[in-house]
Image 1 (cartoon, rainbow over the protein chains, first blue to last red):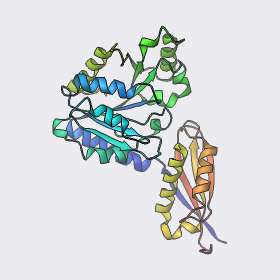
Image 2 (cartoon, rainbow over the protein chains, first blue to last red):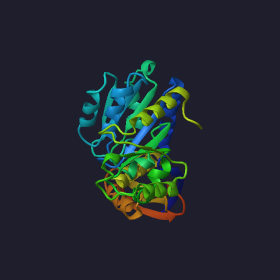
Image 3 (cartoon, chains in turn orange, yellow):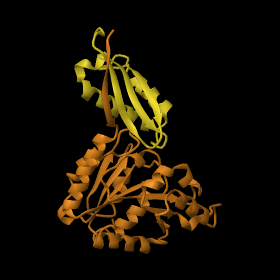
Image 4 (cartoon, helix red, strand yellow):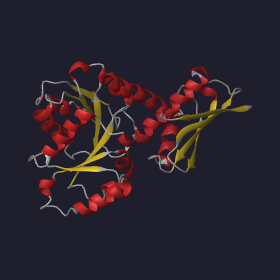
Length: 223
Length: 86
């Protein structure tokens, strides 16, 4: 038996990252800002997006790529609030979106009328942190029903995100959630993280969220 | 599921490197996994072991080495060119 060793030294994510770079370039060429919305299941991503599309979808030229493990339920929900494109990606078991799926979804998007692309990732605070989709920034959504230690349990996701939305703040008086501790936990893993505080259900904090999106589309993200 | 996705990508890289016809000759796949890579090494090894038993591979061993940092890379392949093709 003669065994030879082949030196490989190839990053496992290399192919995904190449495609993500292509996606990023396509979006930049089209002048489109892209947000990758990540969260655990049930944090309220879809409702936040429904509210966003209904309020500023037309104004900000928003297109959505909605990823789910199975079903098109989220894409169908979102489509009821907009005539704009909602592209569904069913991952068929995979726990995250990858850059290839987003790249293929971009083919259906009319860049002539799109200024902001929002990717709703699969509900999962672990895997989507590792997969670059070519987005401009990740936005991590978590809710007051999940516990204030989420940033410590899932530090990679909170490190990768530039923005955080703490949702379901209308429930603060009903659950033992310490907001200041949650903020401190998040800042301990990512001091640059910028927060929004919302109740997508009741509308609390959404004006600030919409103003942020307007500023993104108007000026782009700071480097 | 996360580790299975990564294991599939590792197999794709190995196949790309040696060619589909030579996959059965691969006897080991070396993978570096950083402590901050967000990957559970034992789970990744389990998934790789299962995939590397299936064609076009023929029972290659995954060799996972923990490293500092967030590296996640296929570091080397061991190939036995004399291995009978069954």
